Length: 229
Length: 229
Image (tube, rainbow over all chains, first blue to last red):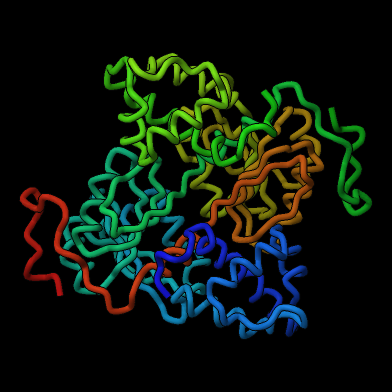
């Protein structure tokens, strides 16, 4: 199956499917219809069937998908049936939060090298990994066979770090810096960009809009009728 | 201009345009062609012209866009010509990194209320904002007229926090928790989901792939021929 045949937007949805299926598995469920799976995720059943059709082996719709098989299949397609070593660059407040983020380890990723420029950060540790001088990047990353890099440096340094990562053999970059980085075509980048995310939310707000009446069952929550406005 | 007429994907691109234009302005540039703007951002000139056509007043293509006018126009469309108060929920390592993130303030957002459940976190401060008990959310958020919430709590608590935010009048949520939250239709959510981002990158990697020959000018960088595999 060539990567080029499958739209990137479909690939981006697979982790969401995987996470939802693993949660269902954890609840003891064995099969799920595309309707139910879609309802959990917020996409249509037709979309789910179309997405899975790219892979052609995810079981039959009708009596439902076998959850364990489907999750294992998606995990193989995403190459998550192994642990990927990841290099983190930057050990300021954000870098430290990323280094300690628990979501990665349980999901096939291990931050196994950390680099920083700030002398105060070098030699510190996170989860048993010592922070190295950024100048060691191009020696250590190829030695460890690392293909994935996380950029958590200030915007002004992001492009330079991206180039060092790419020159060290990194092929996939998760960029937390608020800067667009330019990389060769063979390198994939995903942006973590909270400011742009917020900026694209305010479009939908009105300065003077009022909160609507509660849409949740507030019987479980403290009353707020008096405090609202 | 109704929000419903414009595809969300176009709205998501506007912050990128804005940031690029402000950077050009900072460099003293006065006008830019859609070709040059596109080249900086990595989209086609045709895409840029089509995106701007939704707003119908962003100046003439041909002799180029007036950078200041275009940036101001996008800023108005996104309603970023004011400061938005934001409520942050969660003050663990991630919450603290968000509270101290400098990108927000200079971009129309101010974290003006912070909530936590952990008693150790309550009473701590970030940028002069004291962390309040989460139970105060539904009193404080309406009082302050806050419409934007950031969720930085563990996955298991994310849905409950989302409901509390929505019931407090929040209409836009930035969700850092690795969980899909369900909200009413009138509420917009953007996800910050680094694990899914990484998981959708490994699809494009091969276990055995080798780094390609350097594509950057390595004359400025330490030699790495010896160390690379």
